[in-house]
Image 1 (cartoon, rainbow, N blue to C red):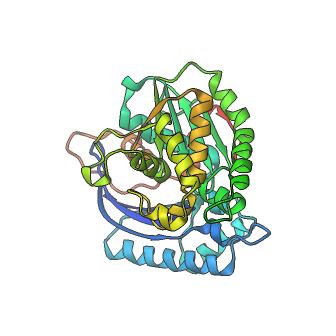
Image 2 (cartoon, rainbow, N blue to C red):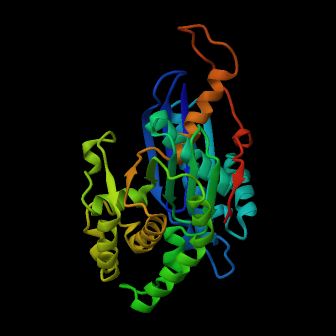
Image 3 (cartoon, rainbow, N blue to C red):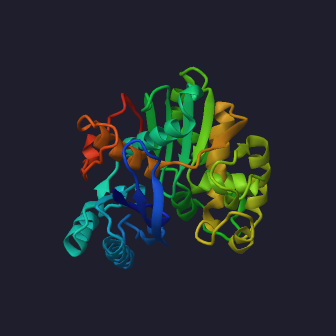
Amino acid sequence: MRLGVLDIGSNTVHLLLIDAYPGARPTAFASHKRPLSLVAYLDEDGAITEDGQRELLDFVHEASLFATRHRAEDLLAFCTSAIRSASNGPAVLERVMQETGIQLAELSGEQESGMTYHAVRRWFGWSSERILDLDIGGGSFEMAYGTDEFPELALSVPLGAGRLTRDWLPGDPPRTSDVKALRAYVKDTLAEPLARIAQHPKPTLVTGTSKTFRSLARITGAAPSAEGIHVKRVLRLEDLKLWTRRLEAMTTLERTELPGVSEVRAPQMLAGAIVASVAMNTLGVKSLRICPWALREGLILRRFDHLIFDGPLPLGSSVGVGHVELGQLPRVPTVGAVD
């Protein structure tokens, strides 16, 4: 079947069409995306402005037409922190439904963290034993720990790279005093969730997901994306600390010239580096593996798991289209702070 996955994130809005069948590896068929930093469209009251809503509606219209044109049989549409945290988030979701006919499911911080961990577990397999995954988005920072298909600890805090850049780093390059204040804020915000993680046995594997972690790894010497998703990529704390200091002195334009840094993410790289370095340093993580799968893949895998287990399948049989509500996603026993 061909599944459309509409991902309304904090930095980009992305429609991915996937061809997948029970037991087969999901294969990308086509993609349509647009850089759209919704956190940049928040007013003083934390509401998404009219301009931001129009940009979002235009893209959802485009995505719907794109999916129809390419014969998508089902659509999984979701949004994360940018709309979840907006003061007018429910009204925005209702407007999208009324004007486009697309219902965006709002993921909680717990679900976002849990589904990302689920993708990481599938990518690295059972031999990884205890996994700790860190994921820096535009609006929030997720952490998940566990030994099974889904985490036993899932945490979410409002430390997204886009949000922090907007609220703490207005200068270009940022002032030293602002960087110092941001670092202190990140340490304070992460103290409690990182202490909870530290209560668990030391992870066998620490991973980093999200474009921010991939870009930080690329800056510090990891292989470019052109070499494929199966190349081992590592982010080392020692290198990250060095590049965090370098990013402090760079303008946004200078950051765009770094390998793996797009124009839309260049302003956010310093904030993302600070969050990553504080988390890794506090937890005593000297290096982490970059996982190419994240939230989107976790939701795709979960959807196809339901198709498989809805009933017995004889070998060689085909499966009709099914629909799984996001509310059916498993809850995580220990829930952290949700932004």
